[in-house]
Amino acid sequence: MDITKLAKIQRQIGTKNSFQREKDEFVYSELSIAVAELFSKIGQADETICLKAYCKVLAAFLGVANTKKWVYLLLLTPEQEEKLASKWRSRSEATVYLTLQQQILKAHLERRNEYLVRAWNIFIKFGLTDLKYSSEMIETCFIDLYMRKS
Image 1: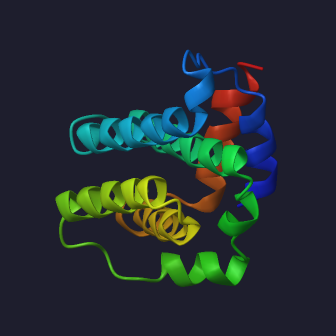
Image 2: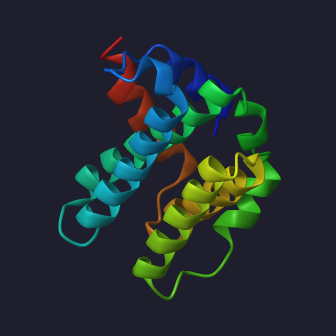
């Protein structure tokens, strides 16, 4: 997956940020809400809707990374992607959701990028193993969603 290319696309997305002075809070809130919306759709919506929701979370992660200048921390080599894809399926979607939210909040409240990286790895692994999306599916859907809007 070409994270750098996707991050550039994300930078072009117009956000309705009414919290100009609270940009960090806004992007983290956007990420947290996107994660909640994704998990609310899993098992209740068709695969296309879930994939689009997954891509919205991806865009929100990239929004945080672009704002904080941390995109380089989210880059994955093909080997790292393969390693994440080969991991076991999660026992509980609820546990994945709560762990993601915890790591996102810790990244914001403690202002430490390693928590965002942990959340990112959990998110990518969840998409590749639990939702069974390929990197190509994710990248194509992301580009379709956000290049049309530009």
